[in-house]
Image (tube, rainbow, N blue to C red; front, side, top):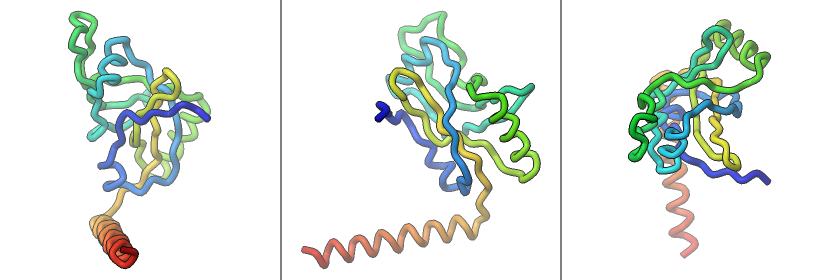
Length: 152
């Protein structure tokens, strides 16, 4: 089994979207960005992906500057290239254009020594869907509490 260690997850994405399909892809980072990620200085909250000139780009992913990085630090919210096969990128481009879906990063994790991004092909939730999801979650919590009390 691969050595997976989750760095961060995008909880907002699961609230805002239905995740139809997910993909694993690599990400091109500099050395100081990797060091900052190892310290936990990354945020996926407002991040999204776009396909430009046949390349997958992640936008608005915030990686804090590394403390000891001096002139080698990169801007925190710069665009970063995601690494996927060309045919996968073209298939995703067709799906996004035709069906009006969005590409959203769901999580960032280490796979061995490499940083990987779990990318979701997502469809937006309406307000009533968000309320329904919250109601189901609350009901499940109430059931779990009741079961716990009964088992005591």
